[in-house]
Image (cartoon, rainbow, N blue to C red; front, side):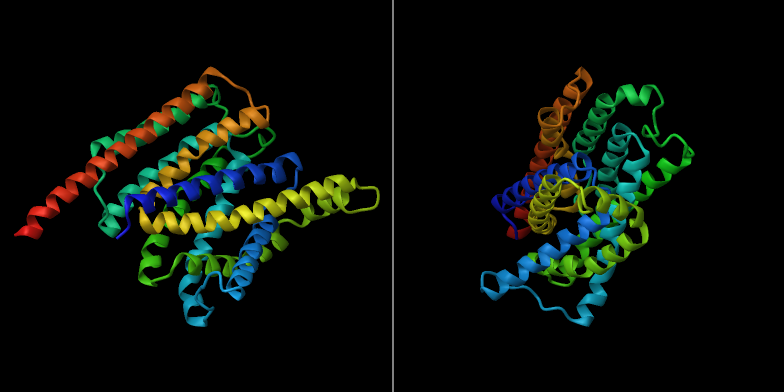
Length: 333
């Protein structure tokens, strides 16, 4: 049985590692314009496997050894993870980021009711549902200028049909919900520890991500080679890119541990809620380090999302107290 301290530590670990990886990935993919997401993810997974192997050899940790039986059972989770990442990347490519955030936050509601229906999770109380609505409202306010003007499609992608961004967004919502719910169910069924899940997720995802990179990133590879490696390329740019990818790979190991720990000791809904609230410090860091515009809508959205997070934490605390109070008379009886 997990304690409140364990839950708080897991959430903090997930938050810090998620923020670090998001910022470093933004540096790699945006600042350096390195458009090979699958390759970056494959390198991050490879780094996690390497670190686990080194730490295991030094007797600093242990993890379950790879077996064909466990790999076959765990592989659907790896596929769900890759699909979640791929559909998210596609949705962000075609849809304005403000509208993407609104729909992404709807995933929390899917996961919350999915836990109740399929896994007999804690019921969604009116107060918890209210916290979800506050979070969605915060993203609507932050992106109201795009939403009100009908800017659904991201600038530079206007040649695609209106159905395309909505298709990828819906696919991302459902794959994200499926991953969160399925992961929580299987981690208990297989009795995997946190380092076991990191090892299997990372090791099994490397060939999948590598094949995806070969299939979909051929042109991006040619462009990146010309800019970073070919004669006449700026060596300082290449060094900065390598350092950024290294840091993001190390943070990927931390976030893999944080996700596993957070889902195991809390719930899929809390994990999803924490992921949504991570946008607060990420948005603030974007305003500070990436010169993103500071508007009344963006600041108001951040404040309202913070209130929604506090509201959710308070609602979960009341729910936990009510459940404990219900259990005590039954145990005495």
